[in-house]
Image (cartoon, rainbow, N blue to C red; front, top):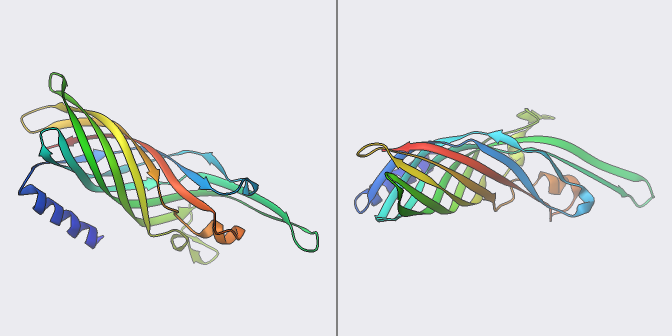
Length: 223
């Protein structure tokens, strides 16, 4: 957390000297789910999507009138309810079943690294933007089935500390005053990295991967 804060201060100091900077606050409710990379025999299923919350600080560094480097620090919750069911026979012909249903809840601090492209005015005081890039995320908390400890083990240990996302989105900004803007948009977050090793160990297959996915509605104000 300290390293991320120092990095943000460094970015603000460096870019402020050469670019117009707009800093704001964002609220980002997110519909989250999980994506599986696994053979069909394991019967992984997403039981439901979940509504989670994201909130944080955003910063746009304009290096020309219509282009900006966009970053920030976002606290975001992710995860959904998943299930799996694997049945096999051992060497003696006995049937062995491995199944489970987990409601996964993860919290991350996100560092977006994106490019924003702005249009000219599409209406008086209104411009549209498109955003593309990625996000580097650090896990700060985890629960499974609303528990932080299961069978004497901390749940957080089963999830990887770092995660990377691809980000694609767009929205509109409204000029509300000389230096105040409000904005709203929709962003797709596609997890690029495996978030844990638990199911690989549980089912004995290193080719299994579990990744986060989400769609957020982003609203906020910039100064």
